Amino acid sequence: MICPYCGYNDSRVLDTRDTGRTIRRRRECRRCGKRFTTYEQVALSVSVVKRDGRREPFDREKILQGLRIASAKRPISADALERIVDQVEEYVFSQGKAEIPSKVIGNLVLEHLRQVDPVAYIRFATVYLQLPDLDAVRQEIDRLISSS
Ligand SMILES: [Zn+2]
Image 1: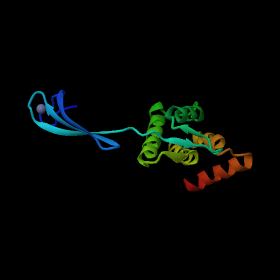
Image 2: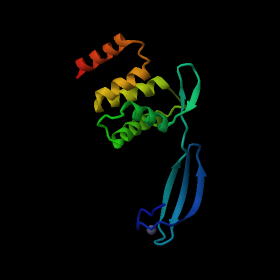
Image 3: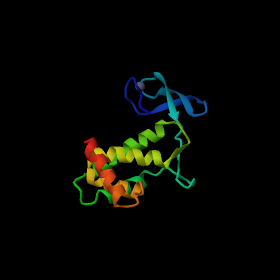
């Protein structure tokens, strides 16, 4: 923990208080002796509720994997994919809920992907939205063209 006064990175803990979701610590800098308070947030886990009602832990690697497949041979950088997952992850954890439907996550991914690459978007949508036939795919493409 870095001292906010002098930037030194070692401090003595004077007092620890567990307030449920946050842990508050009163610290004293070992260099300048000033006191400051830090708060540690307990990391929450979020379960994804799938279509069939099963739950699994939120897994950013899984989303990234789906995005990599959808964007194969498309001009999308690995960074751009990471950014999409970052935004989705940030949204998921900012909700403060223990569970989130997989549909919400999928739609969020689609929303971001649509802005990055339309072809990857259609590939992802075909799998993710389980578009049953070419008509459904065409409708999705029409929707995409008319909204751009
Ligand atoms: Zn200090």
